[in-house]
Image (cartoon, one colour):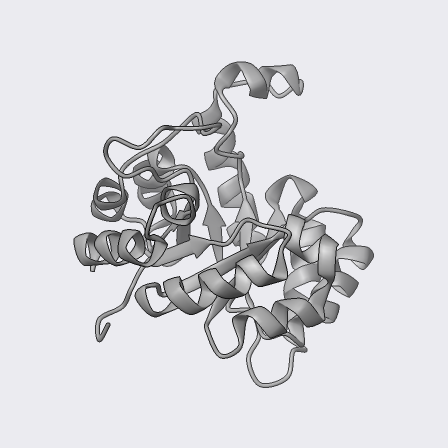
Length: 231
């Protein structure tokens, strides 16, 4: 598509063959494809390169460790040239700053760093169980502001936090929104969802859609339909 395509298709599988099939069929209808922890741990970085080829991709590893270790992780995966790479905002400002400094050493093109605020599977009750005070929105805003100040390029948040994040941080940060479900789709394990068009209209730069595409009878057609709706 000629226009910016904000659709990211999540290829959530541990199978190289399945991920490759999806990438080939779905990739032309998306702005990016996403590979995550399940695939990366099963096969490693070389398999990521094999599956994505020349397709822009989002490497969703949600890095979280001491600053030096996360910086090393960023340097290690930067050679794959992911367009986007995730780390947990809750790792703190020193960790995020170390990750950004490491990303800046990447050859040719550095990955854009996205800080995950609160997982979209989390409800207020789940957040409270971790010992964090306040509601989900307050925690997202607190972590989001800290992460951007520390050097993150953008945030991963639910669609319900897009508007307050834009009010707080402006249009600069990239906002990537998972937990997207087309109208009529089951919510599965997502607690804070929205439809693709609603999320884009609310101010998301990218939306991440997984099972509604990959579990469809025709994944390519499902991706194409969502892209046509939002582009």
